[in-house]
Length: 266
Image (cartoon, rainbow, N blue to C red; front, side, top):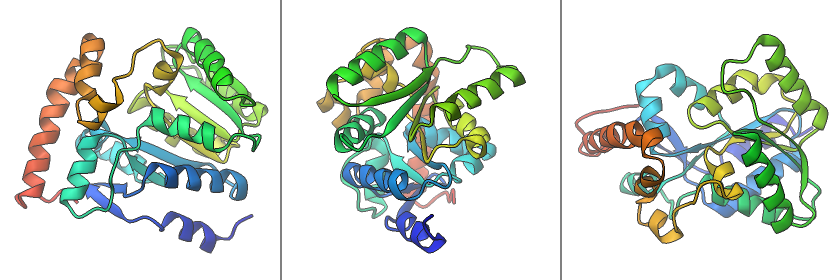
C-alpha cells in the first residue's frame, strides 16, 4: 500500500486553475496516462476518480452547488474542450491542449498494452457496448475486457443497483469506464465509489459511442478549433440543444465576467 505522502505528492504534481469556481488540473494527455497507470499499478487501496471536465461540466458545477461539491472530491479533473484550455491560459495556466475522453481512452489503451489491465465498461446501450468491445479488442490486441453492463434507462431499484455493483466487483477490473453522460455519470461515481473494488474510475461521456462507431466524432481539426460542440449539436440537435444554446451562452457570459474581474466565482 502506498503511503499517504506518496499519494499526496502524486496528486499535487500539477497545479489547478479555477474556472467559474471549478478547479481544473493543468495537465497534458501523456501525464494523465502516466498518473492513471501509477494508480492502477501502485495505489490499489481505493478508487481514484478522474473527472473529464468540459464546458458543460463547468456550467453544471456553477449552477449546482451539490454537483460542484461532488466533483471537487475527484483526484484529478482534466480539461476536455478547447474553451477550458483557452480560459486557463488567459488565467496563467500552463496547459497547451485539451484532454478529451475519447483521446484519453485511446492513449491509455495504447500506453498500457502488455500490462494486463482489466477494463470494465458501464453505461450506454447493449448495442453500443457490443460494438465498443469488438472494436477495442481488434484495435488493441491483448486488451482484456473484464465485463460490460448497460443499466436500465430508468431509476434502478436497490436490488438492481446492488447487483450491478456486485457484478463489477466480481469481474475484478483495474479500470472502470463509465459512459452515462454528464452529470449522471459523476453522480453515479460519487455515490458508489466507496463500494467499488477498483483502483481507477472515470466518466467519459459520449466516448463509448465514438469508439463504438454509433456516433461520428468531429474531425480532430474541428475539435482543436473549438467547434466540436457545433459538430455534436448538428449530429444530435434534439438531445444537445439546451446544453449548447443555453449552457454555452451562459458559459461565455460568466467567463467574460470572471476574466474582466467583475465577478469572483471561487
